[in-house]
Image 1 (spheres, protein in one colour):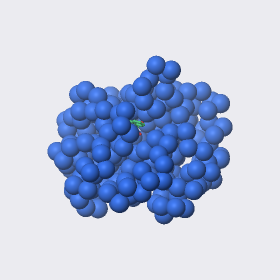
Image 2 (cartoon, rainbow, N blue to C red; image 1 turned 135 degrees about the vertical axis):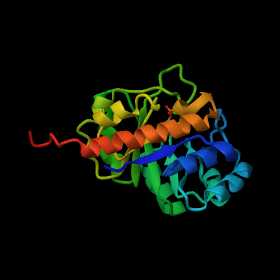
Image 3 (cartoon, helix red, strand yellow; image 1 turned 180 degrees about the vertical axis):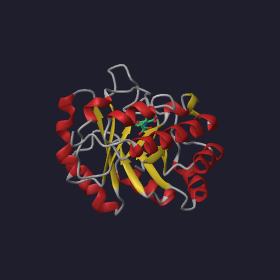
Image 4 (spheres, rainbow, N blue to C red; image 1 turned 120 degrees about the horizontal axis):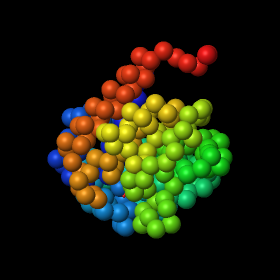
Length: 226
Ligand SMILES: O=C(O)c1ccccc1NCC(=O)[C@H](O)[C@H](O)COP(=O)(O)O
């Protein structure tokens, strides 16, 4: 079973290069001033040029207005717009139509009830990303290194490609993939030495662990009919 791997919150040329060399399928750039991973619009073209088709570029925003999205689209030329705020299904649909880019909507998950949002967003987004719901004292809506109960996604059957994120790292990604039925994994804090400081070694270790886990999952006999 192949999976997609996204390394999010890349800020420097050297760590972006590490993610690309390690084989990341998607690379994420955060535009959210409160984040330690925030990149200004002016910083994006140089990073964008380095990707050169080696991975999909993802622009991550939180409840961004159209002017901000337009500036990001011009500066990064993203392959995917990741919406990580409280964007309604109507707003997701409007962004997709206005900017003509595939949209990945992040959905915050803590309990089974949180899965009830899936159908409305699956109807309008190209992809879904299941992330841990922030705790009241978390400063950010994502990128908090907080895991959730991956068993909630065990029987997941959505009509869109779905990624899992929240507190993943090289040590737990195999367990996460063994429990959640997803098409990919997304990591930020788990490949950092400090908030906003990516570690090339941890990026390589994470991607190797995720690929190994996905290969083992593909090789394991199916239990679906037993
Ligand atoms: O990373 C941030 O600083 C951030 C800020 C605001 C919204 C979302 C943010 N990050 C989301 C991600 O990096 C990933 O999509 C994912 O949530 C992984 O986060 P982590 O738990 O740190 O691995």
